[in-house]
Length: 114
Length: 112
Image (tube, rainbow over all chains, first blue to last red; front, side, top):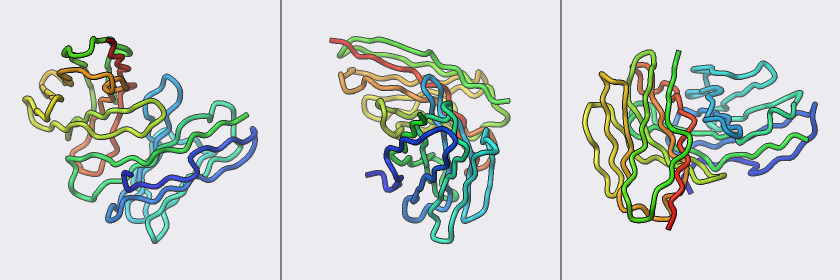
């Protein structure tokens, strides 16, 4: 157990639907990052939150949104889903200043859009 | 822009040594990471380099040359369990909190 908790582990839904992925960071970590990993693609950065505020945005579609709550857990909302959104979605957390350990990843949510 | 290149696939024999290369072009540099990822699982941290040179950690070593934008991961005494994808990632800006940029990963197959 890495200390980063993601739910659900698997999600199957139809095109056009909306889903919410949840992430609880490791205790003490203030930063949360969301990444998407498709087949044959590397980890693509979506969005970062730090202590409740959006800190950086990557290749995140307008149909996707996220937030970080006061208890530091984060949710990634995916709407108007398309077949191409099928992927592994990872959440990662990190400490504020200690950069040498990079991230701790959650076990991911596998989203299948049918 | 940010660009990280690494070979797509490699095969090596159990007990042997394998070197996985990574080249990068990023705006600013504040560290290079290697992660291991077994199929369908989360990436796990292997190593971190921010200064030039070799960092050794058991069977795994990682090297960095900032002037060449180059790193490699060296795996010694290969075991079957080392079959996995190895991801090279760079922190591009001079901040400890900047999102990492990942390469597409190198899928390593260890054969008997």
